[in-house]
Structure formats: structure tokens, C-alpha cells
Image (cartoon, rainbow, N blue to C red; front, side):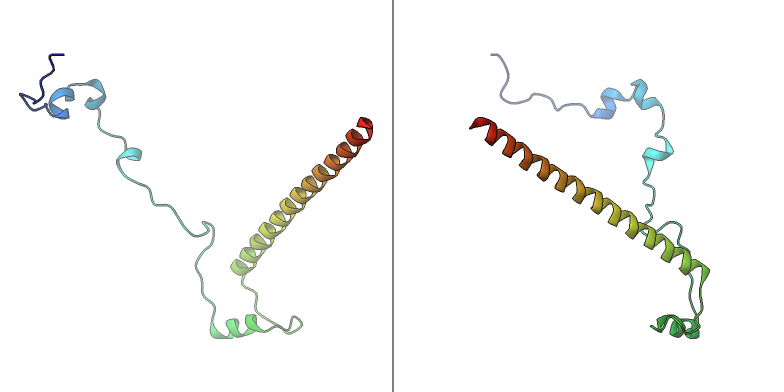
Length: 117
């Protein structure tokens, strides 16, 4: 309905149209102008190294033999053990709810079947 099939003029650029708009008057803030680095490792783990004697002592399977304990390694091992315990606890709770749901479902099925006869 009167629309030309070929444009007569090119469209103006965004900067030409909106350079005076109030949103464009303030510079971007620091958080949106660049990306922040995301740590991939555990944030509270400090890199450290053991001497050769410590590594040999820690690799021994005998728990009764004297061995060297590193405080940072003990803290890391304790955190890992806590995480394992939390995951195991969550799995047990989930298994309990699944079992309870199945038992209730079976009881309801038996009650409904007997009530229908």
C-alpha cells in the first residue's frame, strides 16, 4: 500500500539517532565494562609442596607407621570428608523419600482395590 520496494535513503546509524539519549550519557560501570575472573579451584586451598621424605611417608599404607602431617593437607582432607558425608546424607534422605512414596503408593493401591470390590 504505497510502500516503496527499494529504499531511497540508507538508515541512520544508532549513534546518530541516540547519542543524546540520557541512558547513553553515563559511562558504563566497572562491573559491566569487563568480565571478572572466576576461580576454578577451591578458593581456600593454598598451593604448597611436600619434600620427598614427606611424600614417601604419606604414600605408605601402614597407618601405624609414623608419618608427617601437613596442616593444610589435613584441612583439605577434612573438607573432603565433610563433603562426602553431606552427599551420603543427601542420598540417604532421597532414598528414604523414594521408598516412603512407593510404600504409600502400594498401600493406597491395595486400599482402593479392596474398596472397589
